[in-house]
Image 1 (cartoon, rainbow, N blue to C red):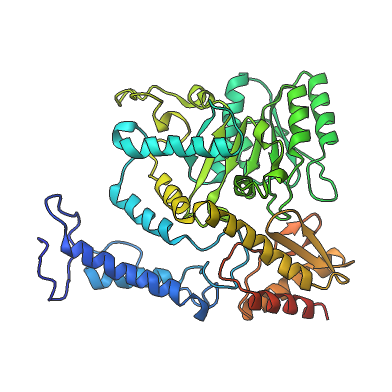
Image 2 (cartoon, rainbow, N blue to C red; image 1 turned 60 degrees about the vertical axis):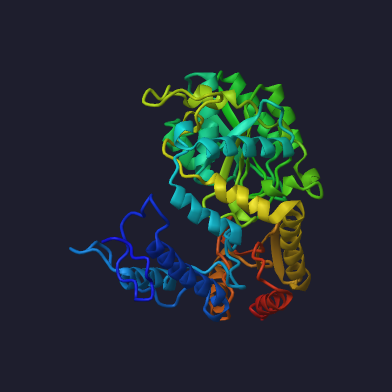
Length: 465
């Protein structure tokens, strides 16, 4: 069916592919309608709970005939009705803030462009944009001039690529990755995928603030050296998942240099704070890392997924992942994006990151960071610390459980209180830390105002009565 230029009549059928000869009025009308649905869903977030009470199921498989426009829009509405709502002021469970408005638009344009960052000829302008933006991040974090990076679909993949890079530079061997016991679970996945031995990931003790003990790290490296076993990498964490702790990066970097160990910093959670001079001192030593994972999606509101792997020498990525791409023309200058990581086909995720940063500007970035910390402090000041044990660090996360309670009591309290809070419009998560469960709030939601924070603290205090 050909697109009609007269939209005074109801639009019933959407052409499968838009015409390359002129703007398609039917596509334009459909996108407007779909955008209206999305804007309505976001704009009424406070009227519904963060998690849907009922999850309607759309039709799963295609029918014999394609769907018309009303059916497609209805399908979209059903999916929205069953979705988690990050824009709700009480959505405080995870590192999933509402998306930036410019990032939403960029994701739409990314889909329309349908460029592939595998190779320069498939995404000429966007490939250049990715390289330049990675260099900007490297510069802001204090890495040297030959540093660079690549975008990846999530921090798990960024961490995996970092460890693969570290191993490729050392050659085969029964290597070990060292990290803290509070490091992200993606490291467990990475070492499994890499086929390391059962003890290929060794998790070391943390101090009272949840930070990797540098003395324990040195002892572990001494032990590996004594047994003639290579250390593939030391992974420091700049923002642990439950406490938001930042490992002592400078101390760890010094130990790593002494033993010539690759230092990877998983800064997926906290790294964006290092972009601001107000908080960069918290990350002293980050500039000495050999590789860094950074996830702007976790606080800055870049639409998912948005993760970067940055390396001290971008040539190490090419050395680790290059295959020659025999089915593509050679790159005009720097290597193809598909030669710098595990992913081949890659969407233009750089677009939503770049446009989101452009929307915020330096002042906007600082405001997002500052506001998140202020929300955490606001709640912290109102909690009953005589009856609560807080597990927090330097970032915008706060975990807690009843003071002096045993594991069984923490288990039942966290389950009951989480469900009660959900009924009051607040969604917190329930992670396990050590031998007990706790409740965790993440204060990256810009829609959570002082009135919400006061009410949340009041409810938590009341749960202890």
